[in-house]
Image (cartoon, rainbow, N blue to C red; front, side, top):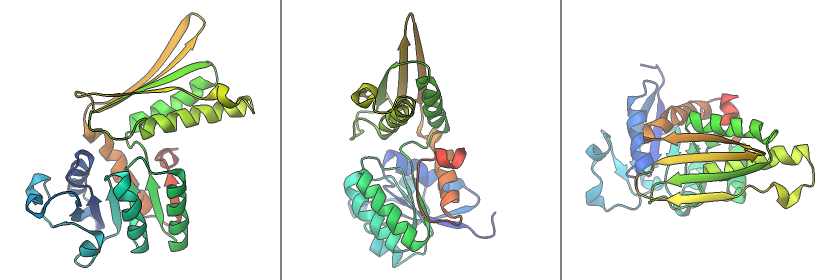
Length: 255
């Protein structure tokens, strides 16, 4: 057991990703899960045993921080909730680990400015799976050698945003590579994204490159949400280090 435990709050704890984060933090030897936030559940539904938490649920961050001390807020809520919750968390001195997608570039920029003023780190990642980050890295390399490319991403029927944050980030990185190779390419470099929302999926993505007489497919599949947890725990440990600002993507920690 670590001498000084990282005290963590999980927001969106009754959601699919939030519940998995609760379990992962609870098992981590260097962390302590001090509370959960869930704004969209009735008080009677806040049963700690539902997600394996031996501690309290709260409806609001204000009520939570009046009762517990914490270092890090893991956010797996919705964009409509996160855009209010996250500025409050940073103002209260918490270091955010953000897995909620759908936030705008401007909103992420504002969090970065706020964290720099607070001289603390935060981290935003559209995908915490190590394999997904490797997929994006490989797609960047392939984009230097094959022109035709499209992305197909598949998620469970309950996912709200489309395209996914992972697909949007993959397309952005491919477009940046292409722009470096041929400045002023403009719309020619825009990568089409196709979104599928069906039962039976968790999180899956194909980056398909086509050339003369050949095809290259780079695919990543998350069959279970446990695949995201090593990255989430790595992000929690990272934001506790010295520094300031919002790290935009877990890849900046890995390489």
